[in-house]
Length: 348
Image 1: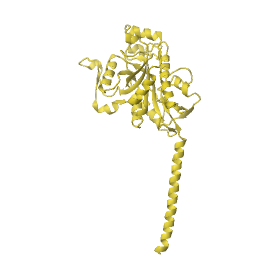
Image 2 (image 1 turned 90 degrees about the horizontal axis):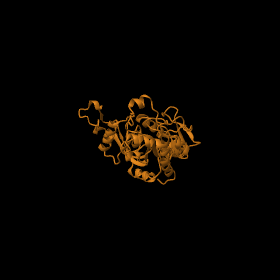
Image 3 (image 1 turned 180 degrees about the vertical axis):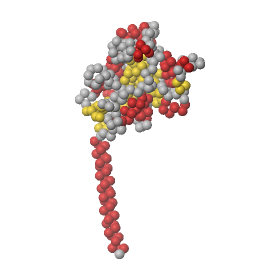
Image 4 (image 1 turned 90 degrees about the vertical axis):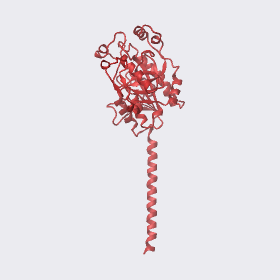
């Protein structure tokens, strides 16, 4: 009985192994097909907002990049992305508006990178847009290659009216938060990008130069031509301005030991950086920001006069940006397009 059963068992086992191998082969073929069908992305550009849509001529942070690389592109809805926002894709370039603020930026970045229709395995991620910049070392119209981002909100903050010492700095370091309080970008990549674009010409307006001269008594740093700089950015969930905030940002950058000085303040970059770090993608993160306003109040402006009246930065008569917004966006694209081109042709 046993002798008769063994050949049958061997035959059944052979059939089982054949089926198993066949299934494995089919699964492998399926995985290969799925991988082959993914759309490869070489560079993902993440502006924060656009004025209207990307093709209406009202230039925000996205339109010039769209005009340069994505005319006639395909558009994709992103699950768990921003309502009515789409991923624009063409020839390895993708662009997506992530919204303002750290929470929106991180969630939108994750939503895009989670989309299995696209292959981001070798993609560079560029966070681009406008920023406020540091009194005493920058001018409106400057473009910045950022080497580190610090979280302006982590730690302890006090209102200066509560301070016994009346110190300029009202921020207190909390070491327990250091793991997520700052990110350093890939230094080799930062060096490559900066050396690639440091001599790109950028412009200002006569109106902006005169405004800066009036605000800072004609000091040499305030009336120079704009240029491409390296720096550290301070990411906050609030749009702050003033001498106390400036002092806090400088203290944070010094406390965390960042390589480059405090240069800009914005509301998204560390959040995008942390999202990328947890995916093992931080080494391909690039931040390009342009200055459209300063981090202090100028020429008798007050919080009430700027924000109570809803002064709009992008308008030519803006009290805060003094007509620099459109030119700053052009400066940003002049620098950013050199980086995108280098990525696409494989020279970065």
